[in-house]
Image 1: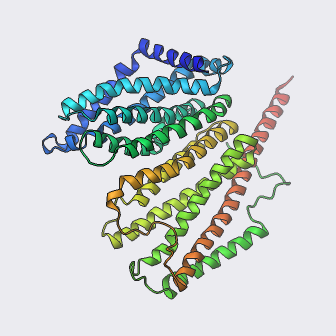
Image 2: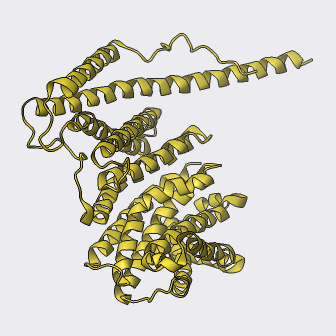
Image 3: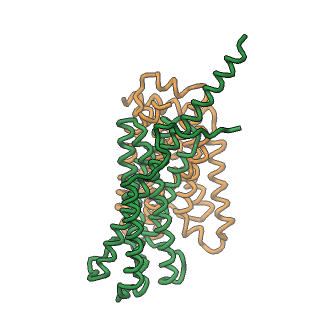
Length: 222
Length: 252
């Protein structure tokens, strides 16, 4: 099982490394969003600094939609999804492999984005323990929900444009939890950060379990 | 030119039956009684004043919506298990009615907000949660409108129906904590335990009436969906028969 998960994740990451879609298209889009927020919110009023965590996670969610779409669009051409079904790999392993690859891609994107908001929004990064924990949990949760809905676009032709409508409301708890925990880590608000991290952790566990179970009918029905 | 074929003689082209007529009469009489009790008989509330009258409709609509989404989730699980059309159509029909009730909930919540807060919208936890979940189920309904094979559409919808209902308590908790420092006067929630007399009776009358209404609408919507599937099959059968007839005529 673990070997299969690694196999799928490595395949996706190798594809990404060779095509550079994430680095060449998704990352510039995310950086563009960071700039657009500055145009919209007036850099002189300190709003950007106050809202750094929220804006950061909104950008991550937008980018996640693109990463998820990309992750499954590569399976759509040339009947690759059928090859995956016939490969003997368990659907749960395919799902977890996809989640792992999306998580790694998003973590790389988030590392660059944190640097970008630190410089462009004049935000001092800190509270490293909580911040890193929040980033990890929120990213895994986003990938877990995203991978489940990503395969929907694969199954229904024309559903690609629906992915944001399906995924973003589902990720509302992740946005709320990650923003609140990041705000506490960055010293923007007081209070304990662990309940938010626990909420994100619960989201991860629930969606990893559900995704592992529900990926089989989604893959097998075509 | 598209030809809409009449339903086959073995299928009754109606969604009505003796049971639905009884349910319909009970629902309509119940709604009239609810309006009379809610608007004229019950006294104004000590805290909420006249706005409590919106509550008599608001709590029932949100309760019926949650019941509808639970039905959708249960039917979705049953579909993935049994793979029968019945469960798929039941899940879809229930979700449609749930979305309708959620829209009513948001609408009357905003009306209450305008009277109480002076604005149609505040980031009140229940109003926010309801809107997020409303959008989630709009996605479910949008998926059902995408052309696909019956089996694919049903499977994808079932998965979304399950994921959406699991997200309800998580979204509730997240939004509650998010607005934790900003709690204010709200009408969202269940029947107030301090209610007494005609107020309490009207609150429970509302709940009962809207659950009956949900059941009535659900049966009609399910039967309509089922008849629609049969009509599509019949159009397809007719088209295939026509093509076959053409090929026989063209044959030397």
